[in-house]
Amino acid sequence: MLKSKGRKMKVARFQSDVGVLIGVVDDVANVVHPLDQDLTSMADLIRFCVSGFTFDAKDRLGIPLSEVKLLAPTVPDRNIFCVGKNYFEHAKEFAGSGFEAGAVKGREIDAYPAIFSKPPSTVVGPGDVVEMHPEATQAVDYEAELAVIIGQSGRNIPESEALRHVWGYTIVNDVTARDRQRNHKQWLAGKGLDTFCPMGPWIVTADEVDGTNLDIECKVNGELRQKANTSDLIFKIPQLIAAISAGLTLRPGDVIATGTPAGVGIGFTPPRFLASGDRVEITISGIGSLSNSFA
Image (cartoon, rainbow, N blue to C red; front, top):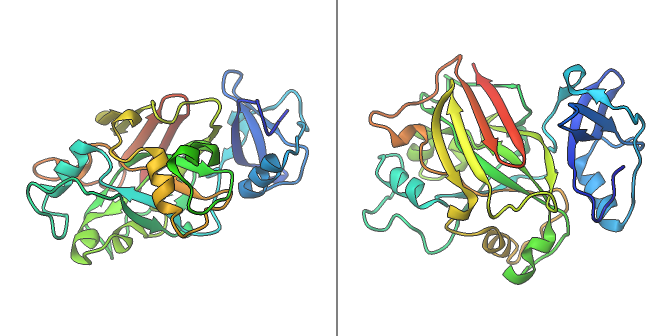
């Protein structure tokens, strides 16, 4: 059912009656086929696949998706690598918002990608509630992003080889406390709060979609806020992998969030921050939709 090469697939991590499982999703039939191995770590599955192992399904009929709870497809062993200001229009709206510490007019576009991280404790799954943390912030914002899942390990990866290291793609919401991002003059304080990285609904393998040409949309309470294509990235996926892996070994299961387009809350006048009860839905073509409520 699951093969390491030549098999296009969507792979999910989910809670079932017998515990946490990993399976292959058929989103046309709306079922998930659990794998025949007792795997609960997506990183382990990726390592097995890259090594050439193949797997079969326990249940060939599949379990209806309505009967399982989808979890974040992976909770990485270490921090998620993230990229800021990676769409031209978003870089401009951020610089003009008053929330970017040290912003200089006319220098909105950086010469190198802005790289930061979010700890694993930020990760939650589809449908999970994102905490507003009113004791820490009054300016919670959303950021729809395509995330890259690393398959092949490597260090000092050249751009020409970078896509060979990609196992798949998923969706993340890089939730941000803008006041903390501004006040602390760096991004971890505003990006690293518990539950601030919804992820899902599953991982789509790299042979199923073209990560360089995917449509991204984000709606807040049904209102379209963000709309772009990954072809608009300033620093393309190979450039990001090359930059992050310079002197740092990327490992199977590592996650790279590639940046968000224009249309975030700070892009409005006045800013439109999230409130308790709001729902954010992110859709990326070829992958699916990730929806979370805030409270």
